[in-house]
Image (cartoon, rainbow, N blue to C red; front, side):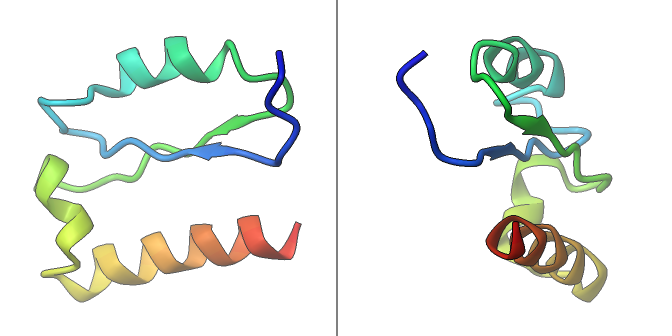
Length: 68
């Protein structure tokens, strides 16, 4: 209830460490937050930006957050 910043919770679709389902439950506790699941076959490793399409999508979503 104390979080007032705009928050995007951004799990990776096939992440086995932090599943989208777990993140969705946490996101539901943050008023005004949005769940943005990032589709990637690489799960948790997609955050490393090894594939240009993953890196672009992550950056695009972060830019949307910064622009809001």
